[in-house]
Structure formats: structure tokens, C-alpha cells
Length: 456
Image (cartoon, rainbow, N blue to C red; front, top):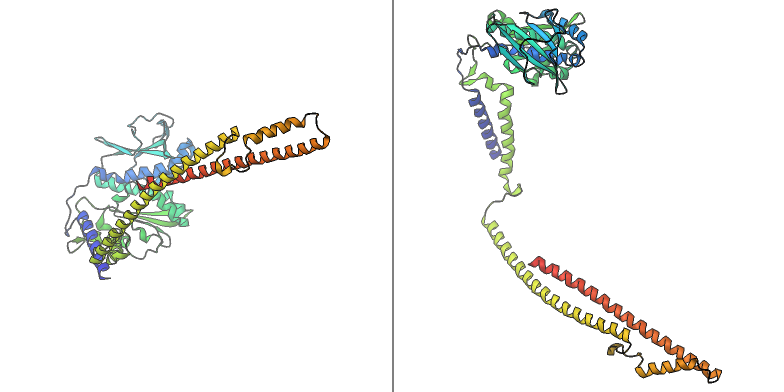
């Protein structure tokens, strides 16, 4: 158990300090990091994401009437009044904030790839987001905004507009507490990591979405939202609150917290460790490492139970020596069996040749009827007997002699013929038996050869 705990602590420390060096040590001071324009338009990029998602179906059908209905609802609460254009895949305008452009070719800067892009000029910026259905582009959303405002104002306006359109898009899901559908839509936000906090609440304060996934589905009691609302005058444009209405009544709220980069952000610390390090989404990795190495430590403490892992001890060396001796004995036995097989094959080949010779002799004797081996010579007719049989056969058809004598001669001749037939059958049976023995012997020789090949 001690070894398990040590392994677990080692895994926790390795993972913790790796995460610490990745996040970096921090002191409770202000950062002088400047707010970049790329970061400032993160909310506008997210706005393009939610618009492309909600417009995918009507754009794919070229349903300009439904697109107009949706966009008129979307732009009601839009601030900083950007120009928004919706086109089909051929860049024909299906809807535009400027009246009179519908049906015309979009003449401004156009997207040149399948991914989201933006272009910055001296006075304007254009954000282009493809609208996709089944992985194929069916149209584009173009958002054109002026650069006259400060980067901080652009950042706040972008996230404010995003929150407004997102609230309208998921108002039914908030009312029915459809957490899975809300998460599916929110996760399409490409710049969600630019926010420090993002929480969606139902009317009864049920958390429908949160950056901390473990809080989803729980009741919101007290947290960052209360602090942001209480300190709204000091935090400036870093907190976005959007109430969500559906069917004439309030159904939920959307709360966003934008990190304050311009002017610096106070970093809360515990000693030299930033408070960010101890958030659940970060501290979970050291905990997993502790559990993982705790389990591994259990296996290491009992190496005999781990397949393929053995301690090298004197006993194990003696066992290996005994196995080597046993292997040598097995090799000697196999060599002996090999020599025995070689000898057995030679004997069987000799028997095979003898059988082949005997079969050949029997076959010739059967054909010529003149020679048979001694072992079947009994019952075989001699040359004189054959001549006598021939003579009797000829007498059978002579007219001489009495009927009684002819009848007696016929009976004797028939008996001799039957005897000859039996002798022929006996010879054929012996030939066939010898052939079967030859076939069986050949099988035995082949089997012995296969065994010999295995030894070699």
C-alpha cells in the first residue's frame, strides 16, 4: 500500500508541476499586455458562427423569405450597427442590411477558403463565415464593421451582439431546459476560449451551460455572476448580461465575462501558484495521474502477478538451469528418434521393393499360367494336367463313346474347370492383398519422411 501511495503522489506531482510550468508562475500584479485587434473581433467571429448555424437550412433551400424573417428578428438588438450580408454559394445576396441589394452579386471582399476568415483595412473589417450543410458550402455570412471605435469597444460590441443572437436562437431550448441542444449550439462558437466565464441560466437558476462542465445541470447558488453584477461599475466593459424572453415572458439569462486585457488583469495567487491552476478543469489532470500511478504501484509491488515480469533470483536461475538440462535431454531423445526413423524408412523401402517384385511375379504367373511362387503352388495345374484337360475337352465333342461315359467325362471336365477358376480367383486375391500392403507401406514411408523433415 505504501508503494502505491508513493507512486500516486509521484504521478500527482509530475502532472501538477507540468501544468504549473505550462500556465506559468504568477504574482499578484497588473499585466501590461496590449489588446490586439485579432482578440478584439473574437466576439464578431463568434457572431458569424451562430448566424451561419441558424441560417444553414434556409440558405441551402434559397428560402429568402424565411431568411428575411430570421435576420429581421436577429438585428433588432444589434449594437454598433454592422453591415450583414447573407449570400448563397454563388455569392448572390439573399439578404442584406442595406435595402436594394437583394438578388445582386456580392461585390465586397469574398472568402477564399472553406474556413472562417477576416480582412482588416484602414477603416473597415470584413468577417466571412461559410454556411455549411453536410460538410458542403451552401452560402456565406459577411459582417462588415468600422474600425472607428477602440479595440475595447469592438470587443464588447461583438460579444454583446453574439449573446443577443444566441439568446434568440436557443430561447425555446432554455424554456424546455434542453441542455444537450444548447451545448451543441454553443460549442460551435469558435472563440469561446476567449471568455473567462460563460454561463446560461434557466428562470429557476438551473445551470444549462457553463465553462465548468461539471456544474451543468446543477442549481446556481452563488458565484462569479453575483460578483460581476455587484462590481459592474468598476469592471467596465468586461461583463455581458442578456435576458432571454420567449412567448412574452422571461425564460433565462446569458452571462459572459470578457478578460480585461487592456490596462492589465489582477491575477489571484496562492503563494507562487496562480489560482487558475486550482480550477477543476486543471486540477483534474494531477488527480487522474495520482489514480493511474496508484494502480500501477499495486502491480509493481506484486511483480509475480504481472504477466511476463519475474524477479531475477537464485531460485529462478536454478529453475532456468533445470529447464536447460531438460531441453538437452529432449534434444538427445529427438536425435535418437530421428535415427530410428531413418532406419525404419530404409527397412520399409526394402520391404516395398520386395513387395513390388512379388506382385510383378504374381501378375506374370497369372497371365502366363506357367509359373507361380511356391507359397501358392498348391492347387495349381501342371503342364501335363492342362494338356490332359484339353484332351478331355476335345473328347467331349467327339461322337465316340457311350452316353454314360460322355456324361462322366463332362462332369470331371467341369470340376477341373471350376477348380482352375478358383485357383485364378485365389491368385487375384493374393495379388490384390499384396498391392494393398504396398499402398499401406508407402503411406508409412511418407509419414516417416514427414516426421524426419520436422526433426531436420
